[in-house]
Image (tube, rainbow, N blue to C red):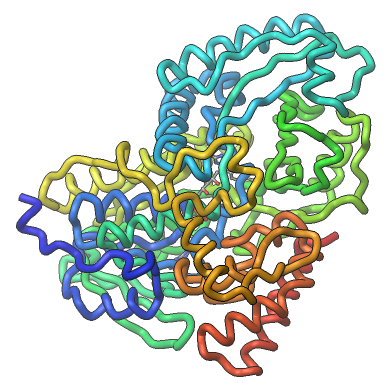
Length: 538
Ligand SMILES: Cc1cc2nc3c(=O)[nH]c(=O)nc-3n(C[C@H](O)[C@H](O)[C@H](O)COP(=O)(O)OP(=O)(O)OC[C@H]3O[C@@H](n4cnc5c(N)ncnc54)[C@H](O)[C@@H]3O)c2cc1C
């Protein structure tokens, strides 16, 4: 049956290149797409990979850059969610733990086993969390990342050298996954292209096209770089726009009820000296009943998060003063080296696309993180809610729904066993070299440096990134702007916003050269980046 579908053409070209011009050229090679995906975050990219690997003619369009939205702003945990266990959402935890295992298997260069220690200041809570985490281990079954265990006070202090010691009774260690969210998104885009999908960033859906029966049969897209518009015809149209889901649902039906509410979460980034070592600290119940994580990430620590209902979605949500104060105060209560406002290297905010609450008084913390796939009367398929960790399952469910409702030839989902671009078994010693995130692409980057020794130059004196990674991102990862590089290909904006601003000129010069742009474009890029990056500084 699959043979009946004309196989989508080329994957990545020579040297693993994913080029926007080549993706644009594909627009004219297909008259009717089997699947059109709107949105290039975790959900949309997962759907593109699932669809293309089942041999459907697949196109994904992203209005800005891959993972520009929520998918670059998560806590970066591939986890079942200890918190959801407390809410007795067993099926979500079990599903996410299984998916965590697939993430580690298929993207080993980006996903790692992370140990978390919960400090215990009260014996009863110690018993409570030990039992809860044993159950968490049990739910993980074969995909366990390691057993949880109770720790003595001395061992807890050894693993968390800066934890508050007054009244400390001991701790509990458990294991979950940690990953680089935006880099996984880029690698998913590359994998989807390798499987035959057409994947475009800076391409926005501006209209939905309907037939005489009011069924969706295509979309109008706008190339955000040139302003050029195209009409795409398609069978199944999938709305994977996260917190912008309502906007697309409104294009379909202006009377549509809100399906999503955005809930903001922020993170503060600090120097690693505030929590040295490899272990993360987890506070299961803050003063107002939230969970707080202090997690080592790319040689810094990230501290978060919050859960604040927001009226209107935006691509650059701003942290509220109350959120910053809450995280600072909580971190100060649990750490002996107390982080201050002036220690913050970067503050980033993201919006969770939560299913709209059923009742008015429902708290955002209580709204399930499980995903739903809804089909509108027009045939538009929308993804509601979900987690990064479950992106693969969300995608499988969305394509199965497309098969069921749009009569695509039946095929089996293969993504449990598809390696993501770059996949490589990576251990702790490999991670001492910052290039580890490139996995199987590392030799190519080294080759780039060998052939062009000037590309060995560092971007910033305090960080290991070199010009080679910038050129790599432009040539192979469809980076188009300074922000694409410093926020999502390298993660410097999220790690140290001031340093990111300081290297924006070097990045802009390379971009202008590689993309054949003039000096005015180069200057505008620096100015635009600086404006965005200032939102990450306090
Ligand atoms: C603070 C915070 C912490 C989190 N931590 C974790 C965690 O540790 N682990 C975990 O598993 N999950 C976590 N999550 C959840 C997870 O990040 C999200 O569920 C996931 O990233 C959502 O992905 P998405 O693709 O649905 O949305 P998005 O990533 O927002 O993608 C939607 C995309 O659609 C694009 N778009 C919008 N309109 C259009 C249009 N008209 N045309 C084309 N494109 C369009 C946008 O530009 C955007 O890039 C966290 C979320 C938040 C907010």
